[in-house]
Image 1 (spheres, helix red, strand yellow):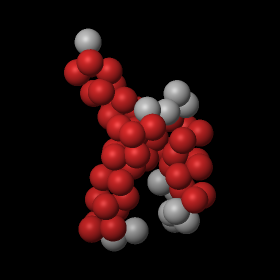
Image 2 (tube, helix red, strand yellow):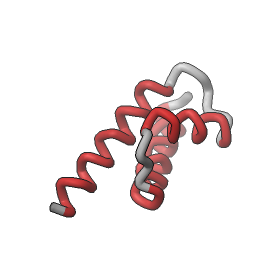
Image 3 (tube, helix red, strand yellow):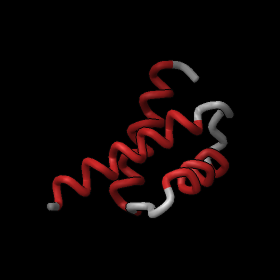
Image 4 (cartoon, helix red, strand yellow):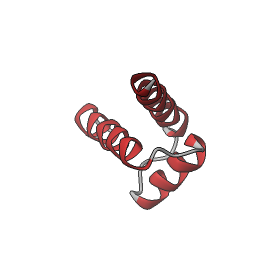
Length: 62
């Protein structure tokens, strides 16, 4: 994945996280990678992106 494409994927995933607020970040990322045909090997990094976004959302709500 190129840097530009990689940033676009991360931003898209952040937006999807804000919309859907998944209960299981790993499963959410796995489905996202499969649906949008993202190159393998990025699941862990993308899962961290989702977890950070959920943490940020939860802390701003409190």
